[in-house]
Length: 183
Image (cartoon, rainbow, N blue to C red; front, side):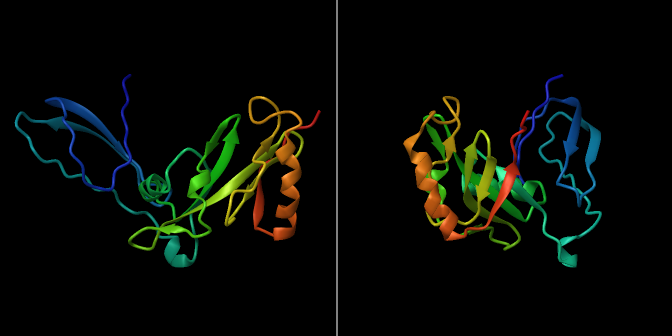
């Protein structure tokens, strides 16, 4: 089955074949998923679909979040968060061997959506093969080393590993992304 999807801000244009098509729309846990079979007529130029809200947890003081996100620009993270009904994204800069992702996006300030309902914080994910993964939330600069685990993530004996000690004194908020499994 050929399945296509996209994150959209609510309005978009796409060419659809004449005849039956299947549509699925979702927007996180607070909205009822839409799954419908539609008939597209020849020459049809408009199609309007709506997605209904089941609950509004934000009005009750709750915040929905994704605390472990990689490989997006902050502005794309806003779009995806809004499409998924999320209020907070922790976008984590990381090291993957010689590849460093989102390091230039660390600003110590959140990117906030126009409606003020969604924000993206760029933090730093720091990995070590014994200690696991730690997310540093709200740093003003990258926290190095980002990885000290060996060739697929860093380098054995990476001299940057010793530079993480000033981070402990900085008292940044941090959380375990996941801990390594020990034998």
